[in-house]
Amino acid sequence: MKIVISPAKTLDFESPLKTKEHSDSIFLKEAEQLIGKLRKLSRPKLSKLMGISPQLVELNHERYQNWNLPFNTDNARPAIQTFKGDVYIGLDAPSFKKTDFTFAQKHLRILSGLYGLLKPLDLMQAYRLEMGTKLNYSTKVKNLYQFWNDKITDALNEEFANEKNKYLINLASNEYFKSIKPKKLDAEIITPNFKDNKNGQYKVISFFAKKARGSMTAFIVKNKIKSIEDIKAFDTDGYIFNKELSGEKEWVFTRG
Image (cartoon, rainbow, N blue to C red; front, side):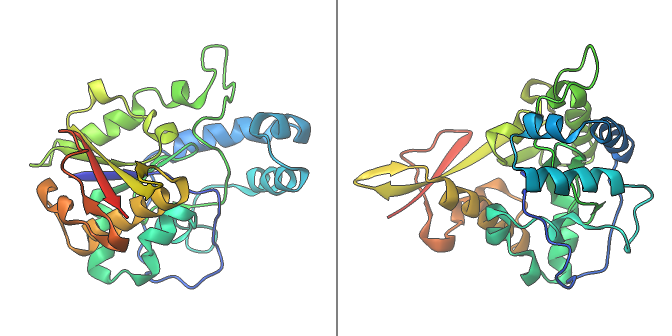
């Protein structure tokens, strides 16, 4: 079983590391190619491409110029201890024990516009490159989905080749999950959704749903869950599995 989640725009390179164990991304060559393209873009073009403020343009222009290989513990940081968005509030990696990091390293993957597919302890340097960015890489490659093509799916299939339970738990956003090609994936996909009661109706509320994706990831990791049926016991922050609203591959968890 594998879990996929999205990355985050907010990064933390300051707080103490809970574990010093680390690994290397399998797609550093591809990341270097993308950085080479981004380095050539002027500040106005970066602003137009990403729709960000002048301050963020300056920050990320500097990041691209400073990005360099090889990564080490002095110039890079493990991904799971770097991303700090809503999903990662729910994930709460600082609370992980050594056994949790070990389980996560085997079962959790982070999708990334720059790094493609990250293991939790893969070293990374600071960047901003959302998967939906329409980066014109070449005459034939007009966006990141075309750049990554089958690479992320193929990498997951290589991992599933050694798995008994071929399930992918999709806890990523639509933007990032589109980088995976379900028809070519050698695994069944289960997509949990999280809904809150608002005025008598269950609705997806973005902030709560993102945090819940991280909380479910932590629930799977900390309980060392390997059977997908056991995921239905998830009850963090008051969510419960709603059988009536759920389908075979889309599981709905509700609260309120």
